[in-house]
Length: 338
Ligand SMILES: [Zn+2]
Image (tube, rainbow, N blue to C red):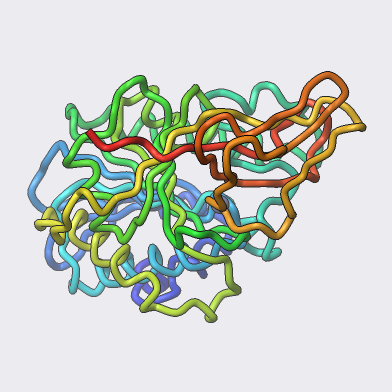
């Protein structure tokens, strides 16, 4: 296993291999850091000095989001070579290796809709089996990991890149937990190069919602930039995210930023397609966080229309190609500073 992981893209190559039970044995590095592979694309790292701090770094829940996969693979190779010495327990997850192998976002089901037990709501078939079983397996591995350390300091960063262009090049989605974001959380996001945070207003079925809801982890979905094929990502675009992950793993201080720089949004509405007569008046190609003034007609369906209610609302994740009953877009407003 180590012979794979010594090279920069070793974790990517290892995740393309069938899982071997032999990889589940702990392997000790000369600096007494230990590693084991728990399943395909899932690697646990134990620091030399025991600690209860538990960090989950996941990537590739959407298999074509290559930059986060490259970042994680590079960090793992630096650990194996001894140039990064982890001081916290880390669980690295490459979420959907099969979709990575076919350069697709997913094989059959969007895995970031399958967590918090939502995989149980889908019909198990030959086509859906991989992602349903994978989501269940990842929940179980994350659960074993967090519960093996008695600690309140659990962090989960789920790293993504987006297909759509975005007014904010980087942003975080903070799962609904009924609480407001703290100053130290804002500092963490800024240190990771995040420009804006979007506070979700209700429970969801994302990986970060699951870890926050079940384990009280400080969890975020981080959108770090644009989707590009392997080898075409510009390292400079991700420099702050890499620096932040390196600091977290080594329990070092984070780069400091003025917390007022983080732009905060909250969800005010979801646009749902109810019937075949649904009409959406936002262009498909609009950037995420494009703002519309009060009164703008956003969508119409048989029995309702949606106009911007606040002085300004921005549209996020517009996608008209969804079945009836599903979400076409999220409407957000900036949170007033207090
Ligand atoms: Zn994604």
